Image (tube, rainbow, N blue to C red; front, side, top):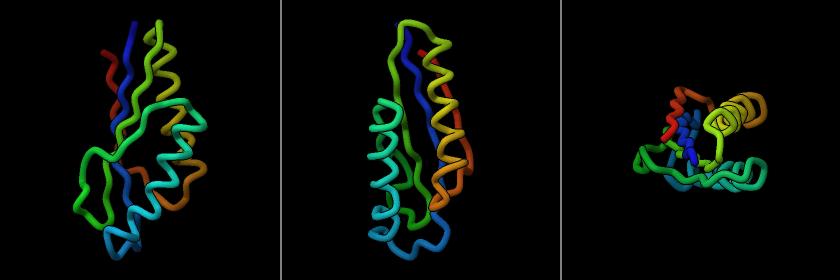
Length: 94
């Protein structure tokens, strides 16, 4: 069994409060859970108005499949979620 973890650093340009950031972040987390069947949560930069660190996790019997799934999450966010800019991403297999 392999666990894949993605840390995704996002920037919400123009967000002027925590409430505004969260109103833009929560729909993304919901969509990631639904589209990719991953666990997703904000795990860092909670007090920042424009930045967020999102963790996504997936479990698979093959490490390669877990890694491909997480790479697809990154590509999907970059292509389809224009409300956020991907600053950095890191994938780790455990």
